[in-house]
Length: 145
Image (tube, rainbow, N blue to C red):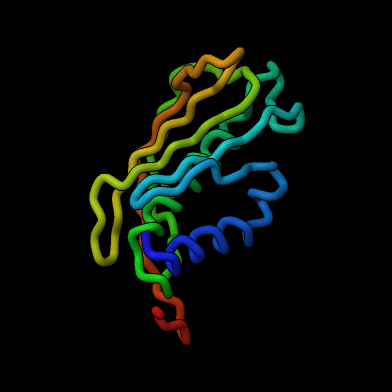
């Protein structure tokens, strides 16, 4: 992956106050694929002690957005156009792992697939899936180097 694109992706993630608030970290970055990890914290749960659906959706959306951004020009940013989420199981465990993957990259729109697994005692369990459409938006005044 081009160094400028990787830097763009990392800068985009770091600049998101919500990701810092949640305590999410980028686990790995490949061309068209991004992994985000989120350790358990009681503040991230709903009334039954499971990770909140909003938290799950947020990191999955960011993993998909990062995957899309990894295939966009270095002077671009990414915005979510739409997504569909299926929750498959309650998420109770030590951490969440969100994986975003580009299915089809276009000039203006990119379609991604996301999954979130919860990790409990070293075992991963799929808890949610996402199909997302991301929009490429070139930033004014920027230029690819």
